[in-house]
View 1: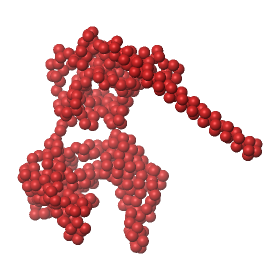
View 2: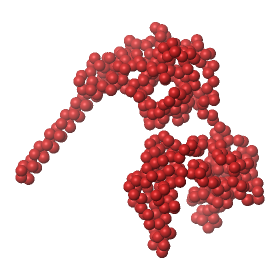
View 3: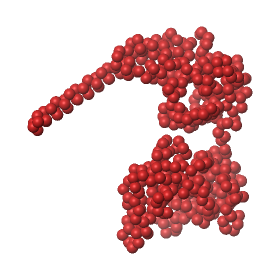
View 4: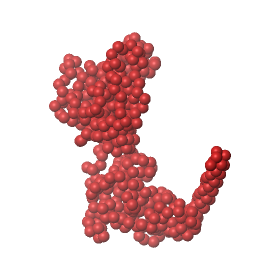
Length: 476
């Protein structure tokens, strides 16, 4: 076959592919137009004929309407949704019960009954605009499907179950976040053979206002004590309890404060390590601390003109080993990494109350202090193992050092990479990892986290280059 014949066939093939692509686009666009139109019609039909029904029943009626109007393309497009809806109602007994749902920004108590109804009541006191929800729920192929009164969507809200045991399960929400469910109590159910909380009789009477559930059995529901299982919000002690002088003699990277003076009314003066010869010229900063949950926020009064020599934006109080510490985020990250690695903690790195003439106190004998959130969640019961891959270009962190140094071991090199675990197992920004088959000077720090992966920054001294994959752990 000569070149011209090959070129002609290639052009013909490209034209066929292009025409097929246009045809697929046209069919898809037409199907979406039909589906959008039918959805509106079916939504109105379902709302007009199923007013007193549960949200799941209305959704099934809407699905039947869509099925009756749908052609072959629409049925293929909605096949997973039809399959899911045809499997419901399905309320497995292992999910029937009273649960707390803890998610970013809120805590709710859920009551899931054996008829596929649920109530959700907010428990953390925050103003989210609505504190109680009711609706239907069901199980389908590893997902919990929700139909919430007044917040109905099409297709339905199906959340994949990530982990589960008898009294806990985790869902992945539509936005990628996770919700933790913890069992509080059982529900009265003849079907499941359990006794416990009697659920509200939702969606059972004709012409019942579904937005106002019955309170006939509210006393039984409210008798459940959920406070011990809910995350407890801690509060920092009054600033008057921490008034005094704090010093540090071994600063961490990024820490500028060498001394703090705190008064009972929260006024703070910080001596900074920028030096009188720095561009800004100032070596101190004044401000006021304000209690926010279990930490203090800094409201600065005087700041340096170039904005490069500043006190930390927040401080955390910590009582440990008979000493009172006032820690910035850098110190807490250092503390968690040292404890996870089994290394001793150098208390000179930490700001502390000056109760010994400026001398650092002895190392605390307590193995693990009561850390504030989110650092408490960063302490690991067992070390994390990960694979580090995707290395970027290796380069000297200081070109001047590379050019001037006569010893290769004096030059610091660096690159970026990623690891195959993330926040799902407790990885946090600033977490440190160690590699066994690497120089002792290798420093691996997490710079960005995702659910199942994280970005890391590597630095080391000497002529070493990482391979395609390097095994790392939080414990050396």
